[in-house]
Length: 286
Image: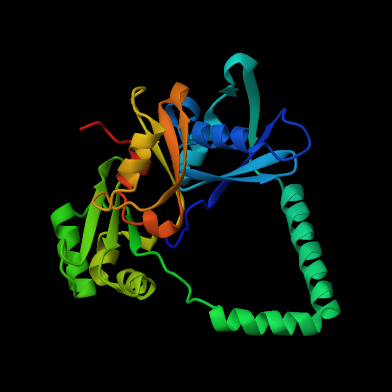
């Protein structure tokens, strides 16, 4: 598990949606289905579409195994009935097909660059002028924290970073899955911090692992009351006090009591509680 990035445990999902990729509305329903432990045995994951199928990448190995152990998977489509899903391990043929496609795409890009070398040089020059530095997630995920109490973890992170808890960073603990997330409000090289944590003897003694939390523009909020509107959800997640930012889209799924909130950029939700993603706590009317 050490160094395992989010979405490191893939599964192949097939269904009767034709030879093309699943349409956007169906992809969102598939994502919500596989993120629900009650319905599919799943949990936090991301969905990547391919021709005639989808690939689900789960954060944790045990979550992937729960999905595989389910005897059947069916997605309810309202008046359209149910969609039977076939979930299997990715086969080598699929991997080879994707690799061949990526190689073909790379070759096409190379040929295009040769044919338009002069134009490409001008474009590259313009891009270099406007190029922005790579942005790094301000949040670090700690796994296997069961041997380290929340208070001890905060003290340990203060010792490693030289910063003060609450003033310079916050720590959120999700005891159900033995995970904690440290989000730095003060500027810090989180990649270097992860390296220091991996080398720290106390972290090793507790058998914890540390990795960057992947930047994302969309989050899922569950247990949304039927009376709450998209306008209220938008205002709630745009609140700076809640760690939010400008929202570009809200997709409500009343039958599932959940919503998918998409921000204008990842900065809008990097400080939002990871608990909203993992334990399903959504906005409540005050």
